[in-house]
Length: 136
Image (cartoon, helix red, strand yellow):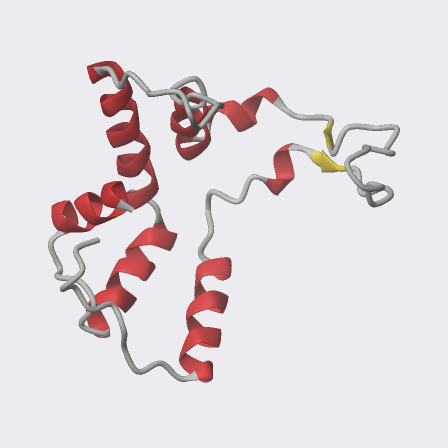
């Protein structure tokens, strides 16, 4: 974000509550139905003391959800070691755009964008919103 951009606004606790409830109610991409959580013990220090993986019974349909599918394509784009310089290809840039497109094309992001517009934080231009998300 540019330093001169001001992303502050007046927001009541009630408005925030209404927004978050609306986002939850309209999350058609909620993926929880495609797998099982295995809540077990907390870890001890850096040691994983759980016998089972965190997720199990993962259904293949999960990987066809547009936002999940485009997110998975991003996983090999980044160097895990922060001291190594990344070589960003055109294909990786396109994968980032595809992910943002799939996210913005959800009811949750439509509601989010409308809320941010109503607060005067962003314009109503979807492409401008996508550029902001990409910068972030």
